[in-house]
Length: 265
Ligand SMILES: Nc1ncnc2c1ncn2[C@@H]1O[C@H](COP(=O)(O)OP(=O)(O)OP(=O)(O)O)[C@@H](O)[C@H]1O
Ligand SMILES: [Mg+2]
Figure 1 (spheres, rainbow, N blue to C red):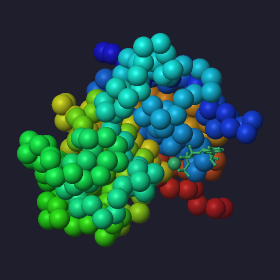
Figure 2: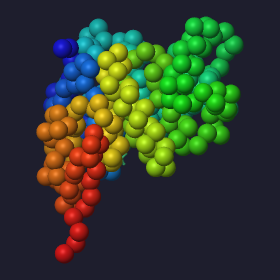
Figure 3: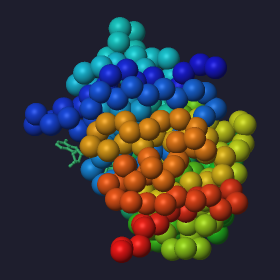
């Protein structure tokens, strides 16, 4: 299987501090990874590298076979092959565009604005992705008026629009209510188990948000890799406790996960 992402000794240094500290990590085609780690651990920074928007200070990053900063690598050719849904993206998108337009514009560059000359084939694709995310009734709603959960689902549909080979999701369930979270986890689970879906990397703070079908977990703390490998092997109470810096018990309940702190004595 070919590498979707290959980081070798990657560091990102800002103001003399390593936000990402000598990370070596490889994601193979078809794998679905979860990144877990406390606030400030470097999760979003890693996704920014994986999306080709941030270059490492040290080490080498190869995305879909193209080395960042390498001879012959054109990030503008690479970027449409990667779908990214995150908070930073939401802020860049015009609030006055409809949901359908927001998804459609993905096919024409990152934050392009609306033109009338869209291909009907693209419109059908955009509608199909929105339907898959349960956003069928919102096609004409202004993006700026959506609730948090509706916005998240629109962004995922948008990220799918370029038919990416790699899909990056930064905290897709943050800010959702319990019903919204469960709905999203179900939809992400369906996507994760779809053999035709892209390779996926999802950042989350909560093991409850790991959808069935996610195969691997990367745990980071203070920019360093603490554990990386198959979910069943690495998502242990020990690793999670080290990762978040407090005693935690993680349990598998059916095909989902749950974690809680040990009661104080
Ligand atoms: N351009 C920058 N210059 C200096 N420090 C930065 C820069 N960007 C991020 N940081 C710092 O790097 C660290 C890692 O940030 P990052 O956004 O990757 O964390 P995160 O794991 O995604 O956290 P969260 O869970 O809060 O989203 C943080 O301490 C952050 O303040
Ligand atoms: Mg983050």
